[in-house]
Every structure is written in structure tokens, then in C-alpha cells.
Figure (spheres, rainbow, N blue to C red):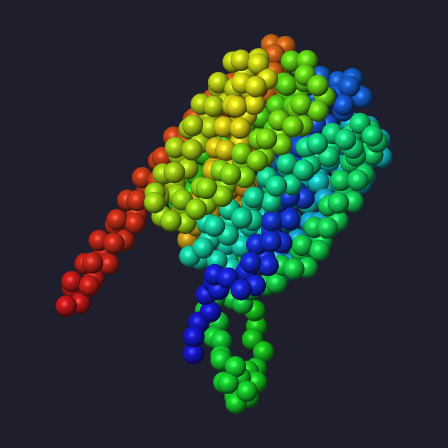
Length: 428
């Protein structure tokens, strides 16, 4: 009898492609919400900080919904949760297109859309990690690159939709596109529980059918909060989220404020997405090759990312901003490619679903506070540059926590190795 582990291929690649489309229809849409920013602000005649609460609500519901998505995935299946998430996401944007007021957008684009993203994004990432072991970094990099590929297409497409149908009509079309998340969910075939015995085809023919087994009840592991490594990684997540979600929201308005053509901000976001794609694939390959430790690489990448954002608004020349935006996109892609899979290094694969849920839950604090805080600074200073300075400071500070996590994980690994050698020596 053999025990079943991650197959590292086969139907796993179908799951990867399904996750690829999930990332594109959720994260890429969220990343391009900045294109709606000025239109919504003008339509309701409100402050920058007030408008930013729409996206901020989406982000916080995305994170708050993550633990619930993880728990439901354990109780039911990845497939069921993704399908429900697809319905919630599509409903959020379809209802938002009715334009019943700004509080209505908080409820639809914020609560419904954010919860729908959580219910699709979390199970998709989880199932990819369960289907792969040796090739996990590459598989995750390919899956997450869907966000970049779709963002390249969505930036000019969304701009065209807004100009042709208005921001309300654009949301209606995008909501219809998100119904395809249900198709992606249908392809998320559950993987057999690790450790369950499997038989060869010949054994299956000769042996009588096995009695049905009860599915092992999996419990959400809140006890992981006792791990100092995870607590420090959560602090990284809070600061990093504050920094991650500010630039996509304020980059388009910042470039528009320089007096550029209306399509230039969209093209800038497309260039950023292409650089993001290159960063994910390259960093996924580096992580898979085990050239450096994941956490060590993440600390360096996040620190550089913060430095680039501090420099981005210094020049008001479009081409200089384009270069720094491309650097920002590349480094962001590198960080995204490994910051989720690094949780496995901290809590092991058995605790991954719960660890990811807890990480996303607390990261919501940064995602919720970051954009409105940046919007408040823009209102006070009258300059979009302030938003990028805040983002850069948060990211540089967050890199320090990743460095501490890496040291603790290395110490734990060395201690475990020493104990194993001691047991072997004692056994002799």
C-alpha cells in the first residue's frame, strides 16, 4: 500500500490554470479599481479620503473573509467555496452598477465584492499548494501570474468601458465577466486526503470494494497564533498590506494630475502588470531552485520595493515615473510570488490553510487603514506624492519583521537537525 501525497503534476496543472483565471478575475480587477477613482469622486463630489473607503472596504472584506473561506473549505470543498465566491463577486459589481449612492458602493463594491474575492482567492491558492510539493513555487508563480496577464488587458479595456458606457456600465460588464469564476470553481477537483491508502488498478480489480470512509474532520488551528514566527509574519503582513494597496489606487490619479492623456494612466498600469508578471515568474524559478531561502529573498525584495516607492514620485516626468513603476511592478511580483508559499516554511503544509486564513485576517488591518490614511495625507497636502511616501515607509519597515522571522525559522530548523542527530547517535 502506498500513501498519497501531492501529485506534483497531472490534474494539478488544471487546478493551476483554474487558479490563473481566478487571480485574473479577482486580483486584477481589484488592482484596476484606481481607474474608477476620479470618476466616482467627481460623480459624488466627495473628498479623496472618502472615495478611497470604497476600495478600502473591498480590501478589508477580502482579508476578513479569508479565515471564513479557509474554514468553509475544510468543512466542504475548495470547489464549493470558489463557486459561491464567484456568485458573490459578480453580484457585488452588478448591484454596484445601479448607482444608488456612495453607501451603496461600500456595500456592493466593498462588502459583497471583497467577500467574493476572499471566497475564490483563498481556496484557489490553497488547492495549488496541496497539489504540489517539489514544484510548489513554480506552480504558485504561474497561477498568480493570471493577475498580471489580466491586468495588462484590463487596464485599457476598463478605460474604454468607462469612456463608452460610464463607470456604472463598466461595472455591469465586469460583473458579468466575474461569473466565469463559477466555471473556475467547477474545475477545482478535490485532492484525496493526505495519508489515505491508494491501490493500483490491478489491486482494485481483484479486491472487494472498500467500505466508505468518513471524511476526517479538519479543525481550524487557532493554536498557530502561539508561534512567534507566525506572529512576526502577521506584523509584516499588516505593514506590507498598508503599503501594497496604496500605489495601485493612487498611481492613475497621480499620473492624471500631471496633465497626461486619459489613456496614459491605463498604459502605465499595463506596463506595471507586465513587469509584475516577469517578477513573479523569475522569483518563482529562483525559489524553486532553492538558490536562497524564501524568507531571506522576501526580506530583500520588500525592502527594495519600499525604496522604489519612496523615489517614484520625486520626478514628475512621465517616462521617469514609467521606469520606477516598472521597477515597482517587478519587485511587487517577486514579493507576491513567495509571500504566500513562505507560510508553509513557518507552519508546515498541515497548518497552511489555517495559517493563511490567520495571516489574511490580521493583514486586513493594514489593508483597511492604508488607503484612507494615504487619501487623508493627499487631502492635507494637495499632493499625491504623500501616498507613495507612506507606502514606501510601511514596506521598508515590514521587511525588518521578515528578517526576524527568517532567523527564528533557521534557529528552529537547526535545533530540529541537532535533536535528530542526537537521537541517531543515541540509537547506535
